[in-house]
Every structure is written in C-alpha cells, then in structure tokens.
Length: 457
Image (cartoon, helix red, strand yellow):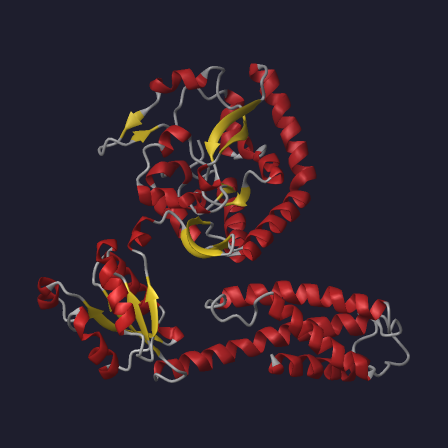
C-alpha cells in the first residue's frame, strides 16, 4: 500500500515534468503548466489506495491469480480516477484536463507494471521454500483428502507444499508411500516435517475422532482446518456465511463473488446497449421474413433451466414449422451409449427462412431481451431443456452455478456438432475458470464461429 502511494506521488511529479514536451497538436496547448499544490500530492495517493483497499486489491486470498488482481486493480482505478476528477472540479479547476488524463494513464499503467516483477520475485523465492512456506498435512486419505492433495500440488507457486497423509487404514498405508502413519502419529509427524497447516478430511462417521484430534492439536503451533465429508457432494462452491449471526456452511453458494457478479452484469448491459440498435434492425427484418414465409408467431418461447436450477422463459425466433415439438419423435436418435440426440443437420421441421437464421445464429438474437431482464447473461453455460436436466448426473449440475448464457465455451468448441447435454465438461471449464477476460474472449470467438456457420443447424 505504501509503495502504491509512492507510485502515485511519483506519477504526479513525472506528469508535470512531461507535460511541456507533449506535441501541441495532440493535446490542447497551455502556455504555462501549473505546479500541483501540496494537497493534491497528499489526497491523490491516499484516496487511490483507500479505494483499492475497498476493492480487495490487497487481499491475497482473493487475488491468488494475477488476472483477479488486475481485474480488481482496473475497477478500483476507474473509480479512483472518477473520484479524483470530481475533487479537482470542485477545488483546483485550473489544472488542465490533459495533465490529469496523462496522470491517470501513467498511474494506472505504473500500478499494473510493478506488480508483474513483484509476483515473479515472489514465485522465485517461493520455489526455495522462503516467505513462510505453508506445509500441509492431511488427516484422511479418502476422496476428499486426495482432492486436497491435488489442489495443494497445483498451487506450489503460492508457497504451499503437501507433506503427506495420516490414515488409520493399514491397507492404504502399505500401498501408498504418501501416508506417513496413523492418526495417532499426528504430533511427531508435525514436529518432524515442520507442518504449518493440518487439514482434517475424515468421513462424517468419524465425528468423535475429529473432536479428539482437534483437542490433541490444541497445543501444537499449527492451523487446523476441517473439511466436511459432504464436500464431495457440493453442487457449487461452498462458503461459510453468517446467517442471523450464526456461521453456517452454504452448500449452494454461487460460483461468482458479488464483485464478479456486478462486473458481469455491468458488462452485459454495456454490450447490449452497443448492440441494441443494429440487432433490432436485423430482428425486425427477420421477424418480417418469418411472417411472410410461415405466418405468425415469429417468436418461440421455451422453458429452460437457468442459474441454480430456476426455470425461466427463453426467447428465440421460430425456425421450425408450427407444432414442431409434437414431431420430435421424427428426428430423435440415440447414440451407441443410449444417449438421446435431439438435433440433426437435416431436420425436416426447419423452415426455409429458419435454416438461414440458424446458419447465421440470428435465431438467438431475441435472447438479448433475456440478458437485459437478467434471466440470462451474454456468456455462460447454455440453458438446458428441463427434461434433459432430469437425466443429469450430480457432477453435471455444477454448470448451473453461474448465470446461463447466450454463448459460451461449448458454442466455440463444436456447438451442435457436440450435443450440449453430453459435453457438460465444456461448461464446467467455464465455471472453474471464469473471468471477465474469458467472457470477452468467448464473445470475440463466437462472432467468428457464427460467421463461419460452424456446427449451426
């Protein structure tokens, strides 16, 4: 925080020195570049750092990935620049807008740039076990314990290291060298391996054993974590929340944080605002063609499963003949595994205009209104039909942890060539790796896929 404040001060000083050398044709020329008053050098770094703190920029747990830190940095910087511009408007109005604009760009860039070598230095020193390395011992070598092991090993660059397991199962101990002993060996193993964190990942039937272990470890200089056995049944991310001032474990917590949800919603509305006029023209022409080709109705409302399993009405242009749903038995097929395939390229129910609309993905345009209403997002797992969701396995339902989208990871990796209900792993990749930058990437690639008409029928 101190370094960020110093960077802001340095950028203020540098901006004043650089300003006279800027080409007058690009920036409004001022005969004299005023020196900045002392209160500006004090208030600007203070307010900028406070706003970044409010956006959790300095929260290491929330910014394990560099993309998360840069997202928080960008949002907080936008708010900081707006705030500081307002302060100047009501105080030092003689400071030029060009000077302030140059400062804002320089400060934002500098705050981002210095964090890159800082992270690289941290990672380099972490490899050597410095920076208070966390050494994790897992009590219980069952499915939950194994999952913890894989997650710890994936994050070694964060200076977290897996020590091993303790388990009372003799058979497991003989087969796996990672099991260092029984649960009774916890204290000597902690001392021998300089363990800093103990994770208790025992099944619920071992409740009394958990209590005993927690008591035994009270005098040890370690942090003790308990992972509930029903972790493996979580449909989404689980989170501890206060409910009426009582800490409770929310097994259906949304995969997006409140900040991420706010950013995603603002991004959706911003893009919809840009696309609204051109899309409306295309939609009106499409509606007219459908009307002339096959009569009303032009829209096809359909119940779909949205975020957290809620049903909502999704809108598309009608691209099939009237009563097409009653004719579904004509086209439904099953693959070699007995899975139902309900879409095919030569579907006889598709109208002439409908085939063109599908090929260009124009039939999906009315979902812009779903996005504006908030029942869908521009990017996310595709909302599924209720009767197909009823056949989902438990792991597939994790795709409903985020808002369902008009386009998503599945659409840019196969679309109709890969039946959605048989490729939930594409959606789960999006849920696990969500960022606003991934949304932007998917939207850009969707435009290219739509132009090519790949997998659209």
